[in-house]
Image 1: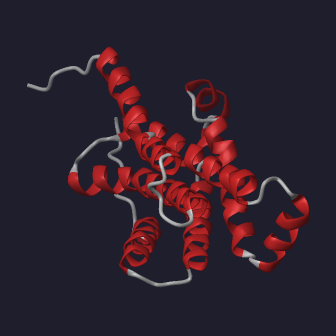
Image 2: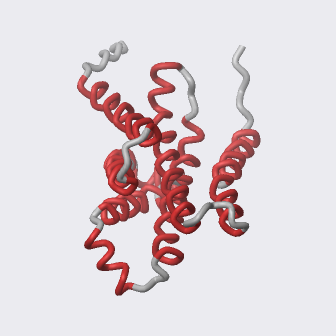
Image 3: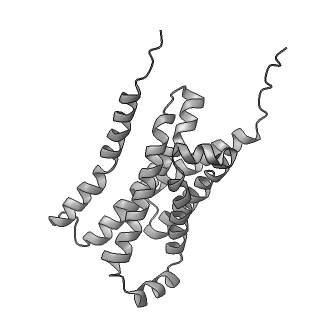
Length: 205
């Protein structure tokens, strides 16, 4: 017999995901403050935050295939994973602006012009903003069907983030192949499933 889930347990689990989710950022910050991030700690910190943003986007996209293919329903955690992706992307960009470039716009603007992948990453972050702002029950009720359409922007955002990651690291290694491969796999799954005919609903008398 299936047991009813306690709202308190769900809320506690949700907060647990936030606590665990921010641990990589906290660990990297601690390593940076104690000299444990190598010869270029700012760059290492910046790259770690960006990589975790992509990882949380991948985890967010994996929720639906897991439910449809394996019967594992983790939908109640998708909001937390999506918000973690946004906050990591925001921290990643903030580190670039402050610690990397010192908020010196005379160096930031030429840097963006010289390295267009920064624009792609910034575009991904901008697309995540409305998704983060509307990740609440009030927005879901008010936007109705438009909420689902709006949140399909995550497909564009993760595509831009994957290209940004490929161009930023410049070296195609196993880590890149795994992360970008998962993005392609998860987007490809949705494309194929969207092209498949849906089963007809039973008509009720």
